[in-house]
Image 1 (cartoon, rainbow, N blue to C red):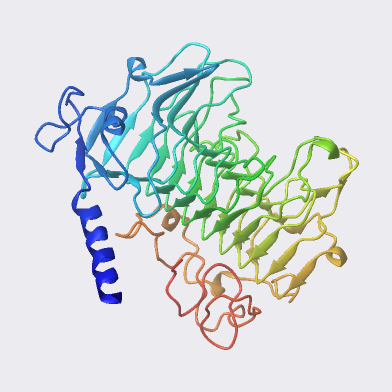
Image 2: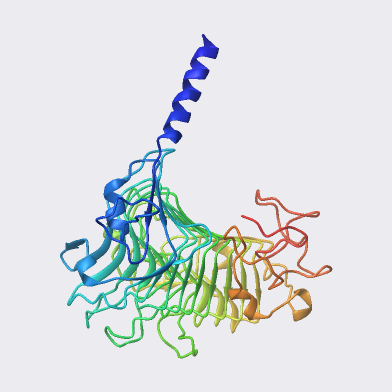
Amino acid sequence: MIKKLLFTSIFIIQCTFAFSATYYVAVNASDNNPGTKAKPFATIQKAQAAISPGDTVYIRGGNYRMSEAQIAHKQGIYASVTYLDKSGKPGAYLNYFAFPGEKPVFDYADVKPADQRVIAFMQMGSYIHLKGFDVIGVQVTIKGHTQSECFENHGDNNIYEQLSMHDGMAIGFYLLSGSNNLILNCDAYRNWDYFSETGRGGNTDGFGCHPRPGSKNNVFRGCRAWFNSDDGYDLINSFEATTFDHCWAMYNGFGSDFKSLGDGNGFKAGGYARRPASELPNPIPQNTIEFCLAVHNKASGFYANHHVNGNIWYNNTAYRNSNNFNMLNRLLDDVKADVPGYAHKLRNNLGYKGGKELTEIDKAKCDLANNYFDLNLDATDDDFISTDEALLTAPRQKDGSLPDNGFMKLKPGSKFIDKGVDIGFKYVGKAPDLGCFEAGGKYAY
């Protein structure tokens, strides 16, 4: 009986995969086509109408010049060009993948609906996997306070993988609601809204995550953010905790010519502006920033941003930021009372050549152990294999993971090797090293 049930289960699984369909989208195609490889659809929007859970849409390489006529959904001031509201199922995602070996690029330079915020991809569905394409040129058309976005998420259990959002005026990735989403190996760079407000681009972050109540367990892993006019990663007004794992942030707050623009923090990990206590979540979430790298951001590399609780900071490396680690908090019941950081947990962090290394922290009210500032260890160039910042934007590895090169990796014999404390992650040697790279180990996540 057991063998019969096992055979039946395997047969059902095999049938599920056997009946999964494949569709294609290509430049200069037609949505009147059946979506086959020979006769592909022209748009992802049309492909969504055809697919079912477990199906895959392959997007062929080339430049997709998007038009206002392709705006799929308008609501209030929001104009969503591609509106994904169909969901997959557990174990049967809706897959929208770049065709292997090809690079699709979606260009929104011509999409300028008057007085509306442009959203290139509005993700309302769940169990959707997007992989391997670029979004460029997303516009801003409103002169006052506004923003546009390349991707906005509202669904659950979605995967955003190997996506590049660049050379536009919009936020790269933006989450307002949804749980268990993974943003994996994505890049957001050279994004600057020079049109609205003062032209500083003060709302244009690489990645924004502002989860509403109940939107839990969202993770950013292996992502990079550079030359975004505001911050690299922004968690302001978040009602649930978020994790940044093995992510890099560099040159944020600058234009590509190093002109000063917006705020310029690498990782802005929380805060609620001047919202009163009655409007804040209870409990206040603690965000986790682990194995991350912040380089030459205009303001702070790692910043608590007036948060009303501590965050968890494990094995991060900061280099050449105006402030490498800035733990500034505020009081719960006094919106104007900024105070040195409290309730933060810091382990195995490493900084070098910051304008200030550690600022705005009440050490007696934090949980600190084996950070470079606890150990009174000062770095020199000789501690690292390389400090060549050109390595930061090197091509990713074949599997999409971050470049594995010598930048800020510890040299054999560095004073920071084996100086950490065990926090539950794998390490090489007698104890963990300080910073985001473990000497002698492969940079993996």
